[in-house]
Amino acid sequence: MKYQFDRWVPASSLPLPVGYYGHLHNIYLQYAAERGLPTLAIFLWLIVKILWDFARALRRKQGDPDTRFVLHGAIAVILAILAEGVAENNLGDSEVLTMFLAVVAFGYIAAEYKEYATIPRIP
Image 1 (cartoon, rainbow, N blue to C red):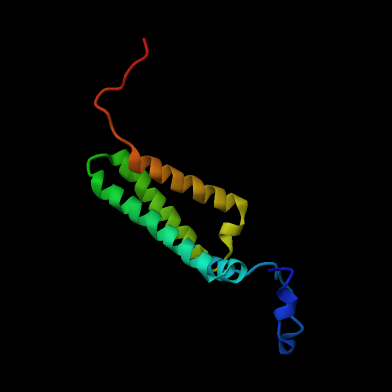
Image 2: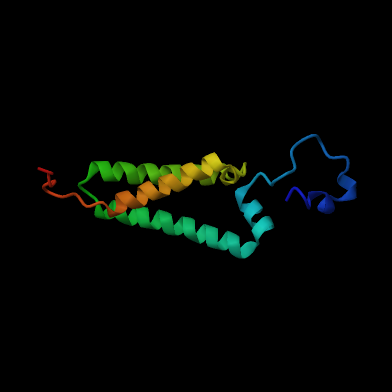
């Protein structure tokens, strides 16, 4: 984006206000502009699939409060990142992206977790 931005600014908008024009301040517009509409569609499908899997796991894990806590937390973090992504390219920052991917991984671990009646002990 930052290398092509000046080519697409209309002459009637010049001079631009002082600011950073290296990326769009919206993850959805950024993905569509930088990588294309198919990439945005796949990204949105992936997010819906993750949320669907976590919600399904919540329905299956009725009696396990620890697992439900992790799944509820993962859903909340994902929704918060997506809501904040309307105003900032937050998944473009490695810190936020790393946290997002870790939360998704923790959610899938919790979704697949099976509580065993006895824990085997090493003698």
